[in-house]
Structures are given as structure tokens and as C-alpha cells.
Image (cartoon, rainbow, N blue to C red; front, side, top):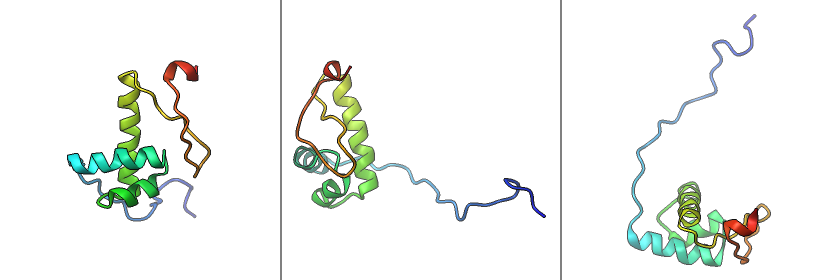
Length: 94
């Protein structure tokens, strides 16, 4: 009998491909869609058209970190699957 955790594979491992920078027009479409659909990554990806929801989510999370570092307003995390158009600053969240 095999012991748990030894020699067990979890299926084919996907190799990570190097990231491709977002073109300025893609980022503009992202920002426009993000204001319409805050944190609704699938809808935003549909608006951007050239990126997957996963790529869009990653870009969005980095974008939000960048906004917070610059002291800009950041939309609050909403309930899963529901975007909210209310803006807050990091100071208001604490």
C-alpha cells in the first residue's frame, strides 16, 4: 500500500509562460470596463477582448495595489460576483 503524500501526482503540471505586457489600448479598455464592472473580471475580460479573465484579474489586482500606493481611491471589495460603484480610500477602510 502507498502512503499518503508520497509519490502522488496531481495531474499534468502547466508550465508558466512569461507575462506579456498590456498594450496601452488594452489598459485603457481595462480601466473603462473596471469603472463599469468593478472586480467583475469575466465582464472586464469581455470588454478588453484580448485577455482572459485570469489575466484580467491579475492585472486588476496589481492595478489596485498601484492605485493604493499612489493614494488614489480604490473600490472596496464587494460580495463575490457583484461589483459595487462605491469608492473608498485606504484610510476610510481602517
